Amino acid sequence: MFSNFTKRLSGMQLIAGGFFLIIFIGTLLLLLPFASRPGEHTSFLAALFTSASATCVTGLVVVDTFTHWTLFGQTVILCLIQIGGLGFITIGITVSILLRRKIGLKERGLIQESFNIIELRGMVRLTKRVILGTLFFELTGAVILSLCFIPKMGIFQGVYYGIFHSVSGFCNAGFDLMGRYASFSSLTGYSSHPIVLLTIMALITIGGIGFFVWNDLYEHKFHFRKYALHTKIVISFSFLLIFGGALLFYLLERNNLFAGMNITDTVLNALFCSVTPRTAGFNTVDVGSMTDGGKLLTVVLMFIGGAPGSTAGGVKVTTIVVLFIYIKASLTRTVGYNVFGRRLEDEALHKAAAVFCTNLTLAVAAVIIVCGLQNFNGTNSLLEVFSAIGTVGMTAGLTTQLNAASRIVIILLMYLGRVGSLSFAMSFTDKKKIAHVMQPAEKINIG
Image 1 (cartoon, rainbow, N blue to C red):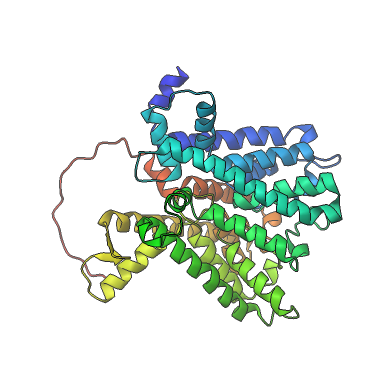
Image 2: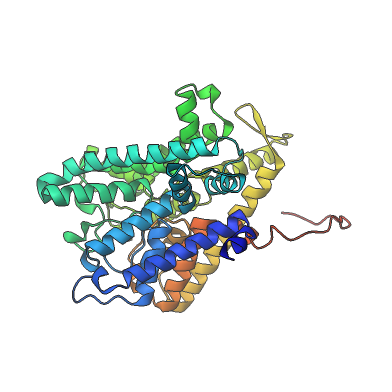
């Protein structure tokens, strides 16, 4: 009966329902008495918020991950991060591959939907590469971070912290265990540690460029001309955002957060401030102490996010590039939307506009609701909401102050940000038959 029910669901409905189920299971596990430390009470809403944040690889927390949760609770969170980062479809298909089960057309379609890839061919091969690549990068990151943590924490704790932060960084989750030194401190204690910062930045970037880009780089190595248009756009625009964002952060915060830092620390922290909003959520400086310009720049980067089919959130870099190309074509009265010697299809523009407007509308509505519920500072509320829908995890300190209604709003935003707000909405309409009747056209004034 259950099998017949799932067969009637579309791929997007299965993915949306699967994430909801994982969040619910994670909530139940975190409510177990031995999931939290002695003397720490875990309400249902706190467990739900944490489970949603971990599964949606966001990183916003209402309780400190180290001081509130036991080793069991932290392990549950780590598992949720890994499942949420790779997607439960990927993990399920991997299990089927290991058991040598046949991967049918339905399963291949689910992988395609999960990775947000246009072509259906090569899905099983891509899944294998994604799993192997994930293991390689997370293991490499864990080794490097462990070597950095062991001298201060000891072998067991150092290795455990290395694994936890490597998985959290690669999956763009932003969860940390640095509450052992100061609650909600994230990586501020390592703001002058270049190896830790560079490793975390590398993990965030690799996880955020997308699985399709990995595959393209693997097949064509350093031959840029052979890359797919998608890969060229993601790499070029990501490079621009990282280094352009770092320059802007330096200009905005040089007399504020970066005042008193030497040149090496300033460059590293400016780069980290540029990388982490897309969309990891770690921070090496006090986000609440940023200038308004720095906060708004963070909001912009969080809204853009990473690449499609990656562990990152946001509206995605390709969405923004397509819209800019359209604006350029309109201003220059150019026929067609051209980039890197290729012309984009009109469908790409339609989807980009829909994704952009849907996410922006949800975010603005949520800001108004949260401010109306609790009368928070507008800029900080903007940061909180865009952090949630972009599945980032950065906060100016509002998360722990959210009341029950505001927490529910943030949970919904994190869920929609991970599943995809447009995809979630379309999952309820993709089976409806629309009459092929064109209505009479009439011009309206624009602009």
